[in-house]
Image 1 (spheres, rainbow, N blue to C red):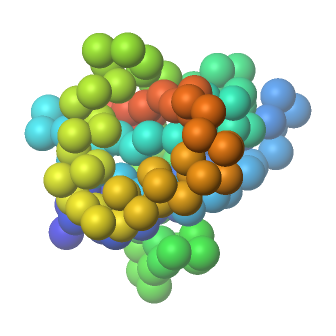
Image 2: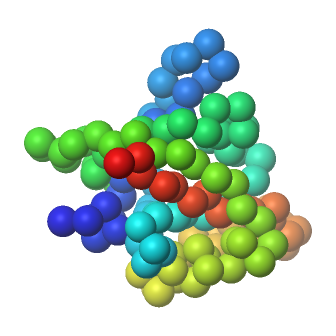
Length: 127
């Protein structure tokens, strides 16, 4: 099974002093050997990726617990906005459908209709 087939992956980012910070994320195959997800541009995972783009990715459940026997892969994470965001958002929408729409609506209500500052993260596994 490809990472893009997984419903969730555990994304482990690292603090400046090297401490691991795992978090579950949705993931979509971008068709070119990379994977991506969307997130709030001000999130801690984005801040950590800006400092340390080397991450670890592991197939997991919705809580970020690695699946039994799942292998961890090292990857390089790249933050994308603007036109670089669009293909990742399309891939996530195509894969998660109504769930993506529901989360987007909840976020709009939560932020009282203000535009969210979102970005995409593209993961390139190291071979």
